Length: 487
Image (tube, rainbow, N blue to C red; front, side):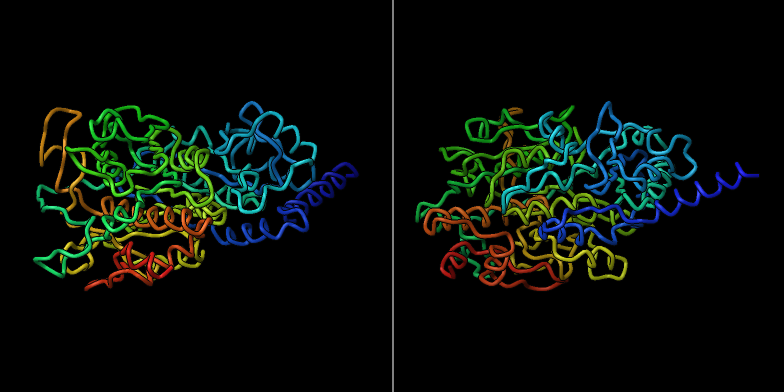
C-alpha cells in the first residue's frame, strides 16, 4: 500500500510538471519575446489535401526546451517538465524518442557546445535569429507513414506544452502552375503602350536609363528548379543551390530567372534586374520548403530579396500562398524582421483570403512578406484564377502574356535555347513585382547609402503603383519610376 501511495504521488508530480510552460525566452530579450508571441495560436491548423499521399512533418519545439540533436534524437534541457513531456506522445510507445529527427537549421559543433553550456550569444540586431529555430525539426519517419497517421502524430505533438506547433508539408509539393496554350506579346518592362494607354508595365526601362539594373542586391528563388545551361542564363550570376533530382518543371524556374536575370545581349530576353549581384535558385524538392529557405538564407543579407515561387493547398486543396503553412509563415516573419524582403506568390486557387475559412491565417498578423496576385495585361484586373484578398499586396502580369526564357512555344532552338510568350499565373507575376522591389532597393542603396526595410518598400510600391482594375483585391501594379520619385 505504501509503495502504491508513493507511485501515485510521483505520477501526480510528473503530470503537474507537464502543465508548466517551458521558459522559451531568456529575460531581457524583447526581440525573441515578440517572435514567440507571433507563433502563439498556431496549433490545430493542419489538414490533408486531396490527392496528397505522402507528407513530411515539421515540429517546432520551444527553443529554450531543446539543446541539441544528437544521433538524430533531441537533447532537452534538464528541467522536469521537458523530461516528462519527452516521455509521453499520445499512445506511441517510447514517446518522442520513438522517432528520429533532422534539424532544419543545423549548427556547427562549437555552436552546439555553447548552447549546451548556456553560452549562446545574442544575434546582432537586424540579423536573422537562427537560434530561435533550433527546435524546428523534421520527423524523418513521417514521409513513410499514411497521411492520416501523420496528421494524428502532428496532433499528438501539439498536445505537448513544449511544442509551439507541428506542420504538415507535402513530400511532392504542388506543381508550379502550367501555362495554358495561349500567348501574347510582352510589354511588362515598359511604362505605357503608346497604342493602348491601358496597358501598363513596371517601367524597368526607366531604371536602366538612370543606371539602375539591380546592383548591390542578391536574390534567392525557391521553387522546383531551372535550366542552368540555358543560353540566356548560363553567362549570368544565376547559381543553382540544392539541384533537383530530375528535370520536372525546370522550364518554370527558367522563365522566372529570365524575367529577373536574362543576359543583356543581342538575342533572347533581357532580365529587368540583370545587374543584380547574384541569383541563387533553390529546389524545394531536396530538403523541403523550410529546409530550402534555410539554405537560401545562407546567401542573403539585409536588403536582399527572397522569392517564394511556391503555393500550397488551402480550402479544398485550392492554392494559396506558401506561408499558409505555419512553419513557412513563422520563418518568413523572422526573415523579414532581419531586413530581408520576401516576395511570395499568392497562388492560383482563386481563393478569397478574407473568407472565414482563413480567419486563423489572418489572425497570425503581418509577417512582412509581399504577397503577389496575378493581374491582366490590359486594365490590371484580377486574373480569374488568382487568389486574392486584403492580405495580397501587389500584382504582376499573369494572363498568358509574359515573354521569357524556357518552354519553347515562342522559339525552340534546342533544349538550351527555348523562349516563351505564354508564361502566366502568379508564377510570372511574382518575378515582375520582385524586379520592381530589387530595382528600387538597388537605387536606394546606391543613392541613400541604406536599404529599405521590407514593410517600408512594400508601402512605397503600393502607394506609388498603378491602380488595380476590377475583381477581388490583388493591389496595384508597381511602377519603378513613380516609386523612386516618391523617395
